[in-house]
Every structure is written in structure tokens, then in C-alpha cells.
Amino acid sequence: MLNYEDARALVFQNIKPLGKYTCPLTESQGLALSDDILAPHSIPSFDNSGVDGYAVQAKDLAEASLINPILLQNLGYIAAGDFANEIMHSGQCMQIATGAPLPEGANSVVMKEDIKIEGSQIRFTRLIQEKENVRYRGEDIPEGDKIIPAGTVIGPAQIATLATFGFSQVPVHRVPKVSIVSTGSELIDIVGKPSEGQIRESNRFMLAGMVRQEYCEILKISMVPDLPEVLTDAFEEALKADVTLICGGMSIGEKDFAKYLLKELGVMEIFWKIKFKPGKPLFFGHRGKTRVFGLPGNPASSYVLFEEFVRPALRKMMGRRVLEESMVKATLETPITKTYNRLHFMRGLLHEENGEFRVRPLKFQGSHSIGSIVASNALIRVEADSPSIPAGSKVSVRPLRNEIN
Ligand code: AMP
Ligand code: MG
Image 1 (cartoon, rainbow, N blue to C red):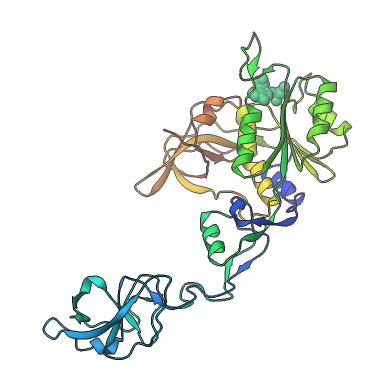
Image 2 (image 1 turned 45 degrees about the horizontal axis):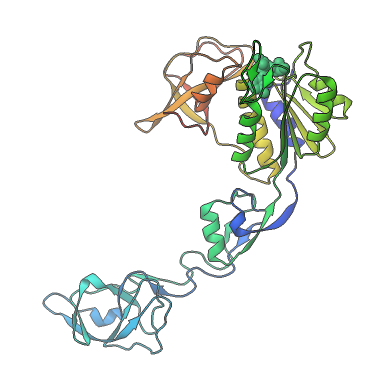
């Protein structure tokens, strides 16, 4: 059976970023840039004032002090969006707004709070360094700088930067279209009232939610009973996507038809079963350009497998550089006494105390446990055949995006 690292390597080997296109900036949040972005010009693009105040020549105020105030002639006011039409000479100053272009001849700006108006003259009582309160052309981002590397996901900071430089359209990767099929004759819809032996289906909505967290597109989600003809039709439809998630029926039960039917439909197996808990029966395969994950139906299994296999796979298809949240080291608060001959990703509670991460595994770790996914915000990595781990040990933890009260 494959171990976790080898299985993940096989997934990454079999996934390539999707094609590129140009997208309006205002619709680009969550997509990954397909090209490096270079600064087409400097920012700031002109020398301007960093404060509301008075543009001066610093040398005019070299002797200024409370007992030796200096008066300069005020030539007028430069508002943001305006510019001065005259050159400022020694003995003169100009009132200026934050962001307004520095008048020619000035080399620093005295804050409004530090002056007194005396008719058409301004009284200065402090000296000022050259360049003080001036934002110089190119000091923030010089022209030609690589401001955002390819593969970066576009968020508010990138949108602001791209807008500043006038990119109304941005080069991005296409996101995968994902189909989800939940299988199981015991499953009923949310609004249904389960009769004996039935349960409400939850995985397709959970998985769709996780797909949406990555800004990928949901092509179709469906729920079908364990009837080979019905499963075949649903799978065929779902295989039109870039990524097909089949949930349930992946193991060796009498009604676990999924793997067999996928093969009948021409899906090539890359691997099936991994030395991992929860979620040993993970299946990964492909048909043409479609990548197929077969996830076990147990909710905690499919949740954890999505985090560790499907999410990074989606991100790689999206052309993202960062495929997952980094693991952190945390101090274990309660011991882990039960270990397995498979790598175990335990659901846990991570929190920060005095600048240090601390984590506590949940008591109930059943792979069917919905309670464990709603109550956890982290996965604790426990190696296969590990001796029991005492409280106080440092463990590797994957933080999860889940709000816990
Ligand atoms: P399976 O992987 O099909 O053997 O299912 C394993 C367990 O997960 C069973 O207890 C199923 O009832 C449950 N299960 C399967 N699919 C779902 C689903 N989509 N939503 C919630 N529970 C499920
Ligand atoms: Mg089933």
C-alpha cells in the first residue's frame, strides 16, 4: 500500500496547471496569476507631499527656532489633483495637500500643525531636513520591478497593486470545473425525514463548500443510490469535469460498485488505498484530462482527504504556487496513547497561548464523526507505528479554516 508522501507525489505528478486567459481585474479574486507582473512605471509616479502642510526649501529654515522664527511668502495652495504653475524660490513657500505634486524648487514639507499664518506670510519656528515629508518618485516601487510573481493567488492586496498600475485585465489560469457525486442507497436529501437505516446526505455539500473556498467552479453535484445503472449514468456525466469527486462506495463492501464502474467507464487507476487514517480507501485515477478522486463516504475521511489531497491538487491545476497551508509545530496538551500502523491525521483543537501554538486532539476520532469535523480546527500528524506521545511534546499540525467558539 502506498504511503502518504508517495501518494501525494503521484497526485502532483499527474496534475498540470490549466490553460491561461485574460480576466477583468474586478472578477479576478481567488484566481492565480499566470505571468509575472512587472511594474510598468514607478510608484509614486511623481514627487508629492506626504502631509498637509507647506512646501519649502529646507535651507531657508536652517536657522529657524522658537526664538528665531522665519517668515516665508505663501504663493498659494496646491490641492490633490492640482499642480503648481510657478517655480518656488528661496524666501517662498506653498501650501500643499497630502498627495499633491511637490512644486519645482521645493525639497521638503512642513506639517500644517507646525506653522502659524500671518497674513500672506507663514511663520516657521523649526528647522526641517531636506526630503522630509516628501514621497519621492519610485521610492515605493521602481519601474520594472517584479511586483507579483506568477502563481500568486489574487487577493485584495494584489487587486490594489494591479489597479494602481492600470491593469484592468489580468493574465490568469483557468480554474478547474469540479463535479461531485455522492453514492449510497441509505442517503436522503436535507429536507427528507430519514426512515430507519437512512441518513441525510452531507458530503456533497461539504465537498462543494471546500471547492468553493478555492474559487473553483462546481459543474454539478448529485446524490445517487448504489444501483450500477444509475451510478454509471451519474459517473459518465461527472466525468465531463476537470476534477471528478466520487464519494462513497470506494471500499470492499458488497455494494461498493464505484471503483469497478469507474474502470468500466475507462478511468485508469493511478492508485487505490493508502497507508493513512482516516481514509484508507482513497482512489486516484484519470480519464483523458479528467482527474478522478474516489473518496470514502465517511464524512471525516472525505474531509481530511480533501484537505490533504484534493485541495492541493485543485490549487496546482489553478496554477498556484502555494499548494497548502504550511504545517506548524505545536505543543501537545494531552498525550496521544493510541497509534496505528498507518499515518494518522487526528482532528484537534489548535490555539495560541503566550505566543506559542498548543494543540489538543479531540477525544472522539471516528472516521464517521461529523462531530469531529465541526469541533476541530487542525489536523495533528501522528506517524505510523509511533510510540505513544507524551503531553508537552512538539507535534506537526496543519491549521484548518474552521471557526470554533
Ligand atoms: P461508504 O464509503 O459508502 O462505505 O460509506 C461509509 C459510511 O459513510 C457509511 O456509514 C455511509 O452511510 C456514510 N456516508 C456515505 N456517503 C455519505 C454522504 N455522502 N454523506 C454522509 N454520509 C455518508
Ligand atoms: Mg456506501
